[in-house]
Length: 284
Length: 284
Figure 1 (tube, chains in turn orange, green):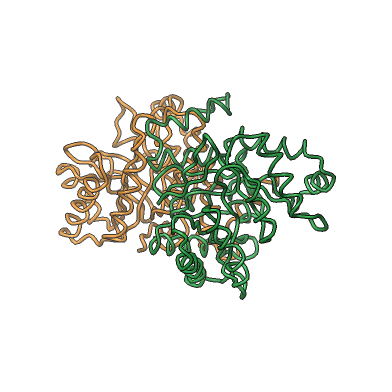
Figure 2: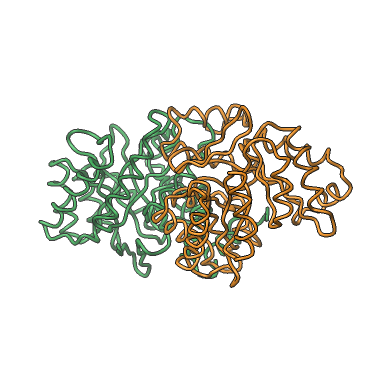
């Protein structure tokens, strides 16, 4: 299945049968004090530097989140979308749980952005899905609802089904729904990633939709996080994930490697091209 | 399915439902001039140092191959099995295509070793399988035959079927057959790993047997081999592989990470224990 986001002249196709798509994650102030301060102070040079670095590192879409407590999110997300859109050429991903912020961002965002996110709560579906319909843009559906994040794969699948069916009832085509099965850290529950992988399998088998992986939460609180994040990407891609909101600078090499190994990089051209552009030293 | 190898008092269970088993690969002179010279000169101190290092790095079984052109392999493998068995406590994997060398090694090897390997050639099956039957030991079955290594998954599956059915006709229980779907480098054919992953899926679905991954060939000739090898392990484990002949020092961290992520490491005890024993620096 193909989900497209675009920004003239670039079209990015998130494709269950194609290479994996990297959505750069760094423009998100959650847990990042320097970025929080920069957004509060409208110091957008720092935001621009993060955006440019993610795209240079291989981000094909850029996630933009301005969720800092105490700011006017509606005004700020419009500002930041404008600044980031000026700085880089890639399509953007509008990241907010707020209906007002998403609406404001959609009104100014160039091209065909991705919306991150809707979830299975009635209030979320009622607020976000009509916007997605109105602007004809794809949206990431998180598998949580009024009861929180379900503890097993079948229950998360049920939330995915609810979102997909509600979207369908509004006339939103299924290819505009990307399911994010959520992942909690295995540091708190060693079954956490297994549940996510199970959910990917169930959703993929039933609907064949694109799946997004929030890849770096999984290792929170554990040592050697990079190895865990790399391994999770391999397992997630094998299970059927087709994109991730992740730090391109850290995980693009693993993603390019896995694409080559999955037979989704004819003659290894993308792998070699990425390597040449980013890693002049050869350990081979 | 459970395949056991053992050496009093240790039993190692290769288990399709359990954590991944690491078979240390370094005692193999192919392409290693220093080891070739050491084996020729009966300088077994170097062999012992490799064996000890692999076990310290996490190898649960140790592969022993003495294939150096121009030596008496039968006499040498008996020597080396004895030396290695004195040096480390883990069960061994007897690695030779020669019926005579395998027979000699089995006659002196303590415990219940693994035999590496039989393949789908008539001469191989006729020579190796009766030994495996006689000693009641498990064997790795390579998916190649008189026509070479098949180019697609279904054809490799057919070779696996031939080996499994022949073994069955001799009264060898299916759990004593571990299939190795072989992997060639994606540097020569970018579809090479995909074929291996496809074969794992086909063999797993039909027979549910344990699958061995020869994990480091896949990246031959390419830059950043370690990232490719790590990603291949993640994809292979996700597809159903349950053991690998690999360099424990390089790939044990990825394997422990993937086991935790697959929900096969309750409370992350094995991951944390491995990390504490091998990587005192925390990047988390």
